Image (cartoon, rainbow, N blue to C red; front, top):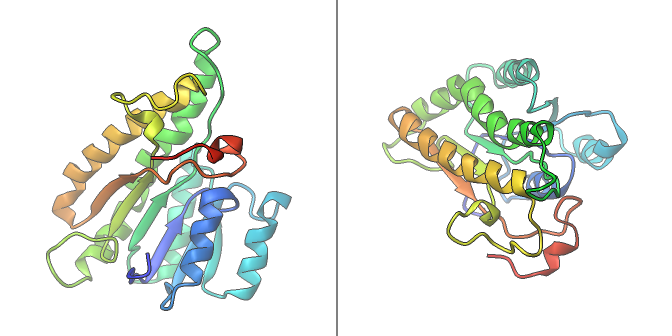
Length: 225
């Protein structure tokens, strides 16, 4: 990430775990973005305390209320970011927010499956749609014809748990809904890459490894791919 040169970045699920780590790293870059937008459900809540502390030290960090499972919240966040950016676009959208429910095939439910899919798969779809005008504007304002994160990009935080070929660590954690949602996210990313390429927007899915966070838990001590 040291070579990243962007004017603006939005990270979802930024109040803890990988999202918070990304925000911290972006702010510590030799040439940090002019604007780092940190999306989280409750910006004033206890779970966002560390994010609030960062914002008090970095005037380029803007905390944005954002519930990725709520279309109205997504639209409001897009409007808020657009207002802050003025006439410029958003260079980088990192769809990091996600949830996991440790249920087996026998215990999986419609309600749980729907909740996980809505956050992990449908959320990134709707965010891509809502922020597309700002991403297109950033791409149009960047020189060159190539695709890059420094120009305009959507990065979807996926997982090797969504791999159909490997079915990584099946016996350790079934998490059926999570696996299915990430497999679907991978296909969504492919569709976005084909659909948004003509606008100069790069779309990629990343597997960050098994990180020791509230969601990753002790499983982060196992090897990651």
